[in-house]
Amino acid sequence: MPDKGTKRGNVLPGFGLAMGFTLAYLGLVVLIPLSTIILKTATMTWGQFWDTVAAPRTLYACRLSFFASFVAALINAVFGLLVAWVLERYDFPMKRFVDGLVDLPFALPTAVAGIVLTTFYSGNGWIGRYLEPHGIKIAYTPLGIVVALTFVGLPFVVRTVQPVLRDLDIQVEGAAASLGASRLHTFRSVILPQILPATLTGSTLAFARALGEYGSVIFIAGNMPMRSEITPLLIMIKLEQFDYAGATAIALVFLLTSFSLLFLINMVVLRRQAEAAGGA
Amino acid sequence: MAARRPRYLTEPTAIRWLLTGVALAFLLLFLFLPLVVVFTEAFRKGIGAYVAALADPVALSAIRLTLITAAIVVPANAIFGVAAAWAIAKFDFRGKNLLTTLIDLPFSVSPVIAGMVFVLLFGAHGLVGPYLLARDIRVIFALPGIVLATTFVTFPLVARELIPLMQSQGNDEEEAALTLGAGGWQTFFRISLPKIKWGLLYGIVLCAARSMGEFGAVSVVSGHVRGVTNTLPLHVEILYNEYQFSAAFAVASLLTLMALLTLVVKGLMEWRSGRRANA
Image (cartoon, rainbow over all chains, first blue to last red; front, side):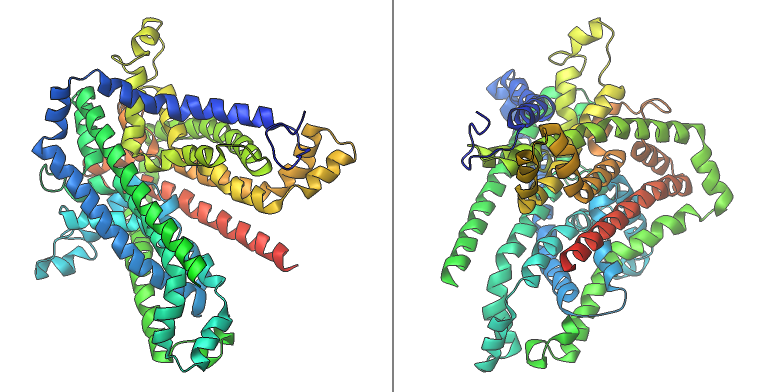
């Protein structure tokens, strides 16, 4: 029975082997290790758990993580859309090079991104020295965290919007133009509704990436408790103090909050996509 | 293609210039100049200091550890990626969406938490740690821990490249080969593997780059023993925190070159697949 469990009467072999290996490897490398978070938290009393999670320092770090990631995702939504638009629709010198460079934050180690951005934006850095006299401090402030998170999330919106822009039906724009719509009007009511779901998906991915980011942030953030300390760093500090239970409790709450938030956003995006597909 | 658009289907020239200008300024500020910073800072004290920073025994041992880690992690995740893509793209089964979500899970887990779970498992007070330590098997603060944490973080990379690729290619060639009497492994090695080789290559290169550059997860499990459990990114951190900026950037420039190589391979792959699509 080679096609057991398949619908198409599949003649291809190897389902059992591939599936078995996939599940075993997934279990060993990802699922069993992750489940230790729940096991470890279960050893704490409710009071211990609450004291760790509701501590002002923890709450502040979580708020900062979510807020900075949100701002960075917003910046990436706007500029990612713009970059995707320019790359897909206009011609300029070295376009291929620029297009390739967009993926740099995917490939560049986060520690390198961290020291580079800090050198770039600190008070005597390349850019920082022009901003600081005007009272704009980036490095060692929450603003620096936003800059680092914008960097790591930059490719997501560009790369999700680009294929959608490429596949847009040009005749619809032609129809809008021939009916007398201005270019701006066409963009707002014809193009934007079609690329908005991809933009939202891309910024959600950027947001998710930013929430857990550690390497690029710790160099530029200054890491002051109650001011520029993000949640992953707080978990790291607890681990270094051998407070494993505390670290685990924070990690659990942080993971659950981010998963439910991402789940909610995905639901909204999927509904919008369905609406766009049905309403067009 | 933009040049071929009729005028009523594009924006006025001034707007086009403005949008291009703003987009390029954003990329210049966030991507290009930081890239220039790495190499300028790395060579600030001259080429001699650059070479000395890389030839330092501690740096060399970090390079060795990083390469060993990647040499274990990349093949493991590549084999997993091929197996997972084979199961998901070639067959229909219940729970496929759940499996795909679970494979992507490590992307939404903070690297610090990824490292932490292995400390909870294998640390001195962990679930199986005391048992292993009693038998003198060290996982945390040693190579196995670094390998495990890196495997976790780079887990989905190859699978994610291959699943959509295999799905778009379909099974026609494989079915033809099997009908003509080829065996399962023969079909896989002579038909399926050549079909996905560019996607697989990019997945492997990306996985290698990420595993050599992983910082947060490795930072938790490594213990930062100089010359013993320090990978390249951790070495960068130590140098930077000791204010040896030129040396830090010299080591960082190695990692940056690796990242740039990844981008080149991706460009090549897209160029190849684009050429085939046009042919």
